[in-house]
Length: 339
Image 1 (cartoon, rainbow, N blue to C red):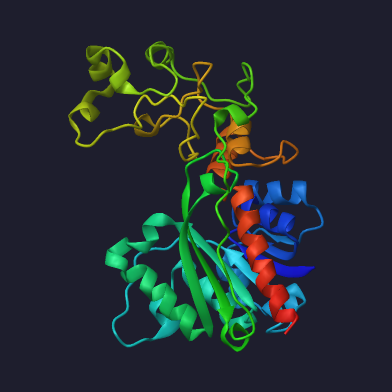
Image 2: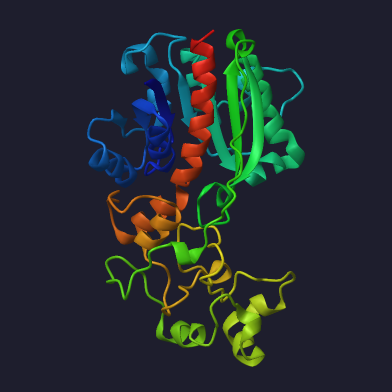
């Protein structure tokens, strides 16, 4: 079984998907205590480090994870990427010191895994006119990797949700001539909300609730509709200053329909400009329903307060998307092993 280490592991969406694809995690790093407890609760055999990755990076990584430089099959994770640009001197890691990406790149430098998987938001591709992502690619190159990247929509890979992620995969230069890599092919069938098990009147321990006022307004919105589908005077009173904003504002008073995928699952169910109302009941989705939309199995337990559970689910990589990418990475690693 191929061995992997995951950084910024969160509640385990990426890790679980990679496990389903055939990877054995020998280490995961996650600073958030509730998310780390989620990982430990579900996979007590995993080595989970609940600490600031800056501390982890300073240590002896080969000793910490029991693996020699060059032996690790895969490094995975998605670091938050602040804006940074080259000064034109190609200083490598010095350019991004003090950022979360610096620690991801340092792991690459110290462990030199055969491959890496770096996932992030779509917006990183164009952030700061593309300079931020170009800096990242330059550093990957300097660390000795050839890279491939693509925007993947989770809806194309067995996830009932429109959620786009920027996926970057790297192969170490000395191995690149012995293998190839392809991003997963899109599925013919794309699931919708009818494919998701929905709860009936979940408890307040599992589901946030709207205020009485907001509930009355949402009761007027048909499934699949939004603010334009109700009396404009009522919508204007609810939206207040948002009424005068430009754009379609299609996320406001948005009620998901059964015959469409969910919009991107978020970390907070109560934001006015990004409403996600349940298609059948007048309430937000429960955290467990959100987890199903993210393709977590119901056996996956989330630890912490309700708000922390929503946050963990919303921040996760959809499990099915992670699995599909993992299967393609596995094919490449098998090619490497077969020479």
